[in-house]
Amino acid sequence: MKDNRKTEYCLNCEQDLSQGEDYCPSCGQENKIQKVPIGVFLEDLIASILSFDGRFLRTLGPFFFQPGKLTMTFNKGQRKKYTHPIRLYLFSSLFYFFIIGLVIPANILDDILSQDITLYEDETGGLDELSPGERAELDSVLEFGSRNIPFFPTSEKTNRKDTLKKKVTWKELRFLSLDKEISNQEFATSLSQSYFHIDLPIGIEKKRNFVANSNLFIVQSAKNLPLMMFALLPFFALLLKILFYNAKLYYIEHLIHGLHLHALAYVVYGFSILLFLILGQSDFLPIQYSFYLVSLFAFISIWRVHKQHWLSTLFKFLVLGFLYISILIFGVLTELYLSVLLL
Image 1 (spheres, rainbow, N blue to C red):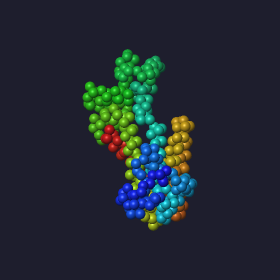
Image 2: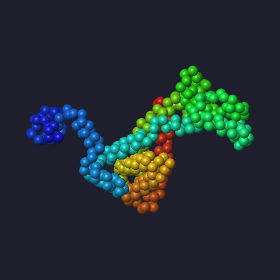
Image 3: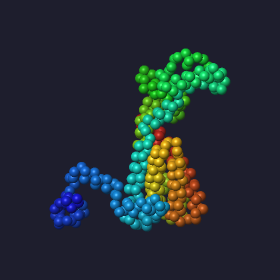
Image 4: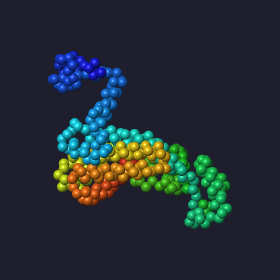
């Protein structure tokens, strides 16, 4: 197909080209016609992004089974032998976040929080002091509640005793947040009487907007998560640089190492989430084993790249894990907070 898309002159500098020349000898532009059918355009785009060629296939072996080899090879200057770290990272992260979007529904937050049906508390200290008759009556109320009874039920069962106090449920909060006749002050009162206290340094209007658009919050967070993870990569490389300062490696070499390790983690966790979905959401073994696998791979990779004693490497690896997980938790919380503000 490539031979059928050549021209007799360079489209960039108009230099005459001999028949069969792939590149312009004057400016270096590739000799091919850019106006192509949509199918050819998409084919070229996918090929340029994924680069499923010999290099990509050669990369798979050391990527999965030879920890540290890709990093050491790239740092030695062999840049064309395997897929570039940036491209490998982008492909792996796209795969992972595609799986996340496939598995986690946009309304997962509402589904989880809505499982808390209307609950009642005894002001004197819990439900243990209820008589058997009161317990049976309360159970009947909860049974009705689980069948989506209307908001704010006013039946005599719900008002049977002044000592029982009704907690506002998530469904009721959603209802109130969307009702324009409810003032922010009234919503704040209802929020304080619920189980869902939003302890964030934001105004009641933002809190109300969060409750009203909780599904959009999940979508917004999913969009921001890849950017957050990419922004944390320099911190991971900095930790490697500090912990292994005597390895005499440049910061950029640690950054390349971080790209390779994160790319592998994305792929392994992506497949484990798929197995989690296939085997049933009650079986967490795939995710648990994937954590062990990624940790072992990362340790061996760091040990081979930095060439230090395994015991010293293990100690630094544990310190690295603790510090990076702390930064990761802070980054996730910050990302979620920003997602709330951007709703």
